[in-house]
Image (cartoon, one colour):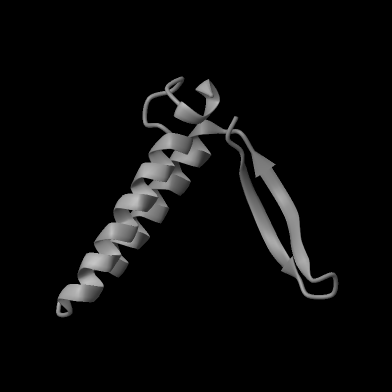
Amino acid sequence: MTVLTLQYPDSYEGRLKVIASTYNRKAMLAFKKACLEEAQLKTLGFVQDAILLRDAQHEYKRLLDLLNMLIPDTEGTSEVDRD
């Protein structure tokens, strides 16, 4: 089961501290949408450089595939939960 977790760097302990977690589907879908929008905007920044653009497009596709596995658009279709 996928869980969305907010973490904060604890410089004293040298680790990430979990602040909050949720299994809320709406929160996960909003997170997925925000991540994909941010990645897409980053990709647009490389329009003038063909190599960097191709690399950013590849990374966007990889992120999209992973997020679709972890947070599918249709409830109950997670490939992760089936394994």
